[in-house]
Figure 1 (spheres, rainbow, N blue to C red):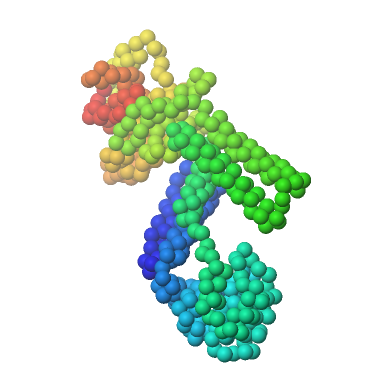
Figure 2: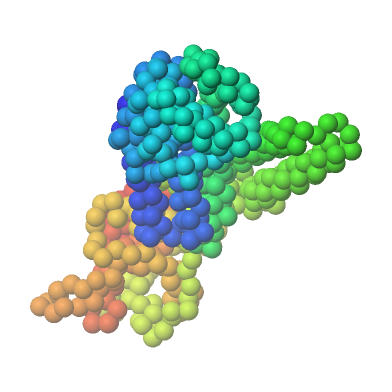
Length: 503
C-alpha cells in the first residue's frame, strides 16, 4: 500500500511531459489555434486528475480489506508522509486512525489522535463519528465532563445514512461501561464507502478524450490547410457520441434515484413532475451530443484514400461528395496538411520578377548558343506536352513541394524556405532557398528556384513531372545556372534525382 507514494509519479510525470509536448507543438507549428491548445491542456489535466482519483479509490478499496492494525498503520503512513500539510485530508486520516485504535481497544492512542483533529474542517457525518469516538475515549478515561459534553454534541447532530445508536442506547452503554457494544455499533454506524476505481477511470478517459477531440476538431487551423484525418475522426466521433450518451443516461438516472431517496418522494404527482424534469434535461443534453456528432460527420465531406507514401509523408486523396478531389500529406494518424491549399500568389511581381523571367530561360553565352538552346528547349517541350498543351498546375505545385522536401532531407542547400510565386506571364515557380555566396571574389545574392520542364516518363514507364533546379542571381549581375533535374511521380510524389545539369 505504501507504493502509492511513488506510483502517483507514474501519472504526474507523463502529464507534465504531455503539457510540454502540446506547448512545444503549439508554438513551433501552425496546426492548431489557442482554443485547441487550451482544450488539450484541459484534457491532460482531466486525465491526470481522474486517474489520480481512481488510484486513490483503488487504494482505499484495498485498505478496507486490511485488519484494523494494518489499516491504522496505512492511515498513519499517509498522514505523516503525504497529507499532514492538508488539514481536510489530514482530518480524514486521523479519524480513520482513531476509529481503528478504538476497535483495537487502544483508547489512549485514539484520544491523542482525536485531539489533533481540527473539527472546523468536518462535515456533519464526520462530526457525528468524531463525537461518538470522543464519548468512547472519555468513557475509557473516566472523564465524566468529557462524556457529558461529547454526548450532548453527538445527540445534537442529525443522523446521516448510517445507523447510529440512539441517545438511550448510548446512555445505557455508558452507564454499563459496555465498550464491546460501543465498538460493535461503531462498525455498523460507519459502513465502508463503496469505491469504483474502474468506473472512475472509464469516465475520466471518456471526458478527457472528448475534450481532446472536440478541441482538435474545432480548433485546428483549416485556413492554413490542416484537417483532422477522416478515419480518425470517424472512429472518434462514434466512440465519443455513444460513450457520452451512456454516461449522460446513467448520470440522470442516478441523480433521479438519489433525489427520490433524499426527498423521500413516493409515487404521485411530485414523482411524475420529477420524471418530467429529468427526462426533459436528458433529451436536451442528448440533442446537444447528437448535434455535435452530426456537425463532425457533415464536416467530413468525402472519402479518404491513401495514394502513396515516402520516407517522410503518407499522401492522401479525399474524393469529395460533390465530385471534387483534394490532396493531403501526413506523418501521423491524427492530422493531415492540404497540398492543394499550399498557397502561391503573383502579387509580388515587380521589376525583379521581370528580370527573373528573362533569366529563367536557358543561359545564353552568345546569340548563337541562345538560339540553339531555345530550339532544344522548344523541342523538348513539344515532345513532353504532346497533345495536352499544358499541365495540371496543382500537380506541378505538389511536385515542387515534394522536391523541396527531398532537398531538405539531402541537406543540399542552405537557408531553405519554400514559397510559390509567379513571373509576369503567370507561370508558377517555387523558391526553395535564398542566400549569399562568394563568386569571383564578390558576395552576391543567390536564389535557388524550381521550374516546370513538362511531363516525362521514367525508366519504369511511370508518368512524371520533370522539374529544373536553377541558380538565379536576382541582382542580374550573373547568368542563371542549371543545377539539377528531378523527376516526380505524379501519383506517389516520389522524387528521383536525374543527376544532370545540362539540357
